[in-house]
Length: 257
Image 1: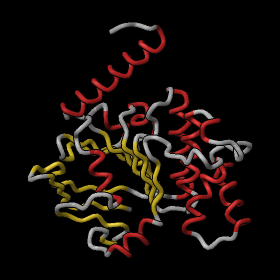
Image 2: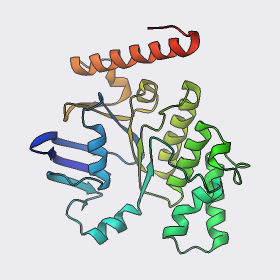
Image 3: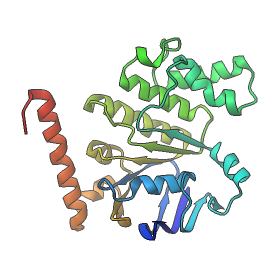
Image 4: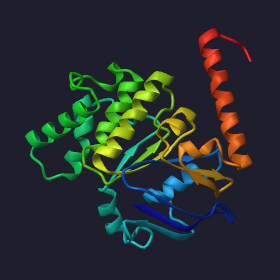
């Protein structure tokens, strides 16, 4: 469990995050949603230590991450897995070598053990047979699955995903959503996903935090979201769905808008 208490983040005297308090739960897909510029990415960067909060706490199972020394934070990050908006794979490494990379850097396993563990993770994301291919030889959806395999290879307790469906078609996005949700439940991880994808929100949003202008505006599950009286949330959902349908129309029919 990750608990955020009274979190503020300011840049040049301007508050970007304003008194955010929330809990991200174990074994559930926790989604952060909001307009561009609302503070979603800044919040996630504060959670993983890429930014330092101006004030407030980030507690990992009761451990104060903000107050840790640099050495303690490095040790703590070994419990985290990251999936970036772009898959961020190494072009010069094979699929298997990409997944093995964290093990090469941080584990005490021998080569055979590292290969076995990486292969297990590739099997979990249905990519056996692609081990010797390079990122440029596989599709964008497959690259995202390689990134998921790499993110879980160290058995993390906490998984962070920044727009994991970015650039993917709707069918492939559903595959990625199902994988993330299944892995979260299987390993009982605390998974946090930044997303604009309303299919993800409605499909796997077990705990959703809506950020508006740096504040937590609403929190609930996907089955609560359509009945929320929060007008800002309603406006965001409507705008997101409308934009999605317009983009799909352009791609499917070449419509000019």
